[in-house]
Image (cartoon, rainbow, N blue to C red; front, side, top):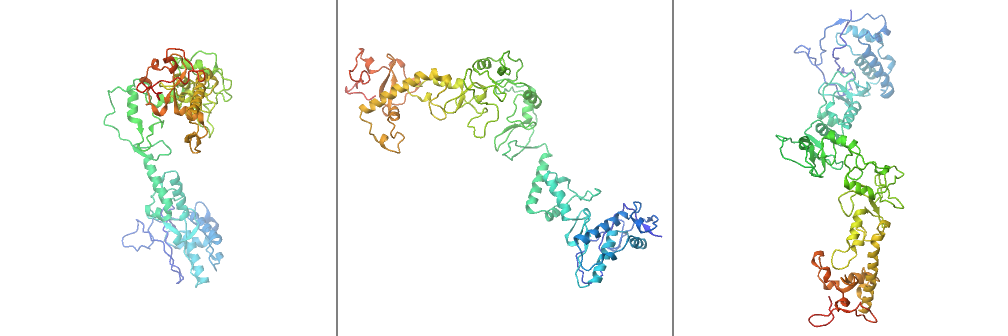
Length: 566
């Protein structure tokens, strides 16, 4: 009677010697079972406990599920079918390959473990050698995953377990693991999952290109970092620095600490800061290693900061609103009761823009300011998150703002204070009227009354300066005739830059005090306004020239009595 072996037993796969003398193909390595007695040759079949084979009535019953060889037979038939289509061998009559009943007879007479794929392969070699003894035929071995037959030279045998696969079936799971940074889970890809032997580095270097191997090594490092709490990635996407967490021997401290607003931090907030606040040494980004918030939420734990962000905040100070302000305007529904915020509310526009956000402009404007909350246009010069170019303390949307005629945006209160302060020293200058970003004179309906008297004074001094330039016969100087000069054909600009004018304390009119090159710079605290008196008022009499009026009544030098130059 025939004997069978348990289907769970390991299968001995070793290619037989070809009957063709011309065949010298590479042989699969021999495997010796742990059950093989000592002294047994390597190519001898391993010993297994025989069991009775099920009764088989005919060849068709070989494929019945109860047949322990049915799975091997199906695989072998599929391999032969693919071989006829994908890897045909010349001059082979595949109709002469053994049938199911022949396989049964061969298995019944053999004491070795039955392997249908091996029977088909051996018969294929015999037929090839019989039909064409002069043709060198490569030995074929099916991949244990895709079951397609491959020449032995193209089959990869894993060192750890001895299973054989084609290169494609090994590369695919490796590259997928690299993409997911999960390379530590790589093992033998046997379909039934019973083999968990790892893949060796030498095998990986054989299967992967140099670029793919570099990606594998980076994925291995990334997996190590992600799985270890001691290593933290910088949250800046442009920075790839890895920071190692070093916990102090004791995170307890009795030292009192304050936040940016001067408020004392709680013991819980101090402990959280000591454990989770990091600053990257490469890009200097400060962040929380737990919630990845940047900058670090000083004074809050991660849970408290998440609750803080979800709560309503004041549109001006950004503090959490605990008690909303009572108002009839929807634009002020998110304003707190702080005094500074209440004052800002009185100057703010009450309109709601089409986008649904409150206007960040000033009250009673004919045209509302563009939204400073929505995502700005790609070519926008300024956004709501930008600091005011004058105060550099708050962003533009934290206070009522205006857009000047030149197109630049400032806090209304900042630009108003700048204009109201006037010139800073004894000499009259007009830089306070210039936009800090483009040097053009500021112009906005809300500033019209404040700017008007200064513009009038500017026009008066400019007229006097040009007239003095003509009297001094300086209209043809090099600065005005040289095309490369910034004053070329600009006599008014040149005269304003060359001559100094001061406000007379008595008559309040500007008077000429000399050329800029003659006097030392005077700081704001170095002069007394009562000392600034024009030449006409200094005589004590209301004197005036019939031709030039009081403009050219000058001081004399206290040493030589000539006209003073300063």
